[in-house]
Image (cartoon, rainbow over all chains, first blue to last red; front, side):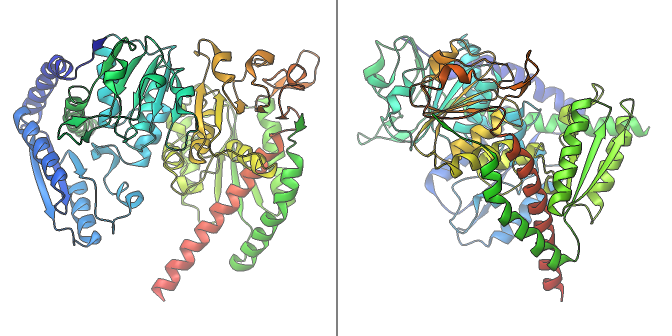
Length: 292
Length: 292
């Protein structure tokens, strides 16, 4: 079984992104900028935000964190986001999840302007993705498609099965696979006989959020299995949604947890920030050319 | 095999819509209004537009058709749509397709305001539908779900297969089935062994636009089959994407063409117009209450 590791993919894609960043700096006289909004003191969120800040800094992307206590009024958070939407110096805005329960996710997902929404939570961006129109796309599904491309796993004409229908992984991943001409089977927690569907798949993507959900009986011999779950396991280590030990002589290739898709998500976030910055620069330049 | 006819569904839903229309008229002092934009002289489009106008009139919805020659400048058409977007007397706007080739569909699908887009072509509406957020939904998929509900065909927990991935039927239908807790298999013209996937389905929806594509080998015994194709057949009659003659002793129920989903599409369009009108009235009333 071939291991589809994420790090080599990031390493192969990084030079092009670094080049884009220098070109952007030269053309605009400034760094691309990411603003992160953090509400509350969830320890995992604080680690994620720190990692994003570190990766941004490493690449030469300027990054600013705006912290609110968990008791923050949603109108205050919203007012900040609206200020960042209007701020010409801000390219990408990210509202770290989970949010306190007083925040309605359907409302929050429409706060950030689609052109600055580097997490791609806005319904308009999901619709654009579904239709194959240009626009920012969610980071993890982008990372998964980049992983497949790097390891030359063909998608067109294949049967793909996605387990999980979250707005940020399962659904957009299905749309991207469909746009790449896979036939797509979408499963979820209410699917009856899961194995009867997952075993149809040439490509099996598991983003269910259930530790060790997928085992030998779910996998078709020779399939490619991508694990997108991430969990702290009872032994203290990290693990995913797939029992990799059970399928290593069955699958032709697999992306494990840890060591798989993880590093690609944060890399794609940075790529989204740079894409958003470049699009804004192009618009501004186009406008000034038109007016001159 | 039970025949799932569309007409009885329309007849059972019509009284509630008629009641909504009278309530709207009483509250607002006017009729809900649909504006249809027709470009060119495609004979089928002219028939469709005439049918929509007739159905609107029958229900007491005021309807206005704006015609352009096929040589029309897209900027002129766009200017009209923008005027209708701003017009407080207009509730629903529909741009009849197909459009001349000089029109970019991705551009046109963003002309009508989401709140007036009764065909639900706008990417934001597709994203909202995918996420289960409120908003106008495409008419044919709505009609299909109403057909299933009327005949008490259960969706939750079932395996649904949708053949066809058009932005206006296949994709939104998949999202609605998924939101109703079906597991969804999405097939299309690039699917390899179509029958190996369609035969998994408890519920098979065919919107491929290929006459008589689906036959006996594609259908699981006992399945429910919904034909959404519509074609002029060599014998001069109308037919669909399914060879109904081959599956009548195999499927447990089927919606044929003609006689199936057809009348529901135009009914759901009218329901969208009334929903758009009511939402605009509610907003206006809410605003005046707030300001008084």
